[in-house]
Length: 277
Image 1: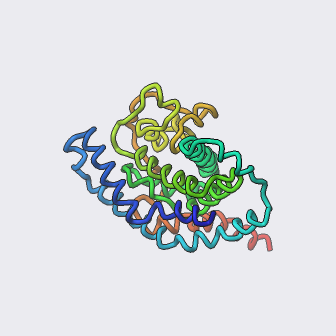
Image 2: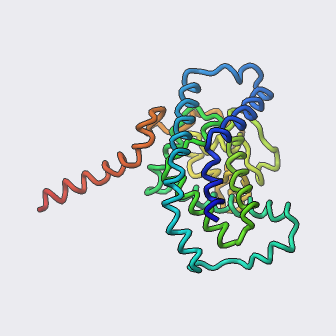
Image 3: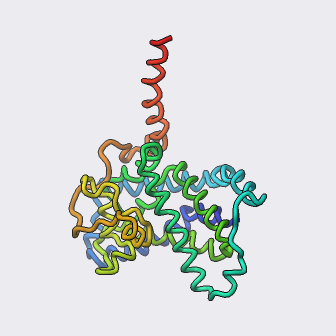
């Protein structure tokens, strides 16, 4: 199962970055025409930083796998309940694949909601610091978030006894689709937006307006947002994107941001303790 997790982590490796970039740039061209190639300085800087973050995270993949080692050992030792794998054998491969994708996406939905809480937001704000959202924004993640997402996927795949090959494919397909929903082009599924995520829908998740805060957490199936009351789509989003109090396009600051936030929280407490001592 560790191999499955490694395959998911490596979705940010360079070979799997270039192909989606070309595919979704072509999709943007189909929707926007030549305007898809009129890159502003802000967009160029965004793609540069996002690509750099992807390369850093790819280089750190062995470290991420190492941090998951104790969790893997705990589960291999029988420390967690597992579904009988024989249940999957009676189903056709396409249905097992669909269920694997839905289970992984369901897990990602709840992890994403947790990322928007007080203690995990300093690592997730890296993703929202991109004010020029484009298909490379999907790989703009801090290593802390990568570890949490990989751990949740590992647990779901293990508990559900998903066939490793299909679990691995599911772990690669969702990030690929996530590139699509970050596309800077107004694609949408009409009435099916309630079930399947789209660039129009996800753009509201990144919108800097109070009405959209805490909305549209799903990566692929907006069905989860519909079921759990976080669906929000009033129309086409023309608002500013990203956050104004984040690290923006500074690569080093993006990686140091969670530590900077922690230091800012701890320093007043330390000063208070010194005054009282």
